[in-house]
Image (cartoon, rainbow, N blue to C red; front, side, top):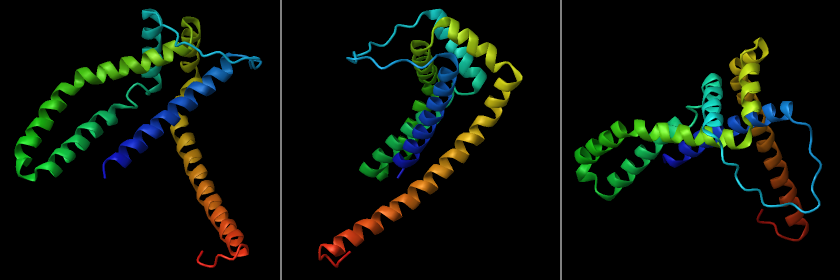
Length: 185
């Protein structure tokens, strides 16, 4: 099913963006003390200058296109749904999907704008300028070049750990169920 790969792409992109944003934010801001009463935060309105800086930052990091695959995934998924409804219309459905793909460029820019707004709503203009300056340094360039491998290695390690933990939990639950007299586990 096509939904699972879409979810994986979106999940991986979200994890990567979170890791990049969190790491950068941790470098820029001192730890904050927890508030006695948490208040619901309103999303900060980003200025056009902050959005432009965020776009530059995301382009420099290669992250602005992280969700581009989702656009094709949505088209492919919906095409598959239509084909399931009426497989006799394959040619027309294919043509329609091609039309939607041709129009997707404008939507891709819209999506990229939303991603930049998200960044610009979290970081101030000065922080974005500082981040841009940092990512142009040798260490910043190394992070850009090496972080995908670090995220991949971390993801593989996390998945291996989760699989092992899942097996341990299942075994423990089976043992506990046997202790309670349930032998079908």
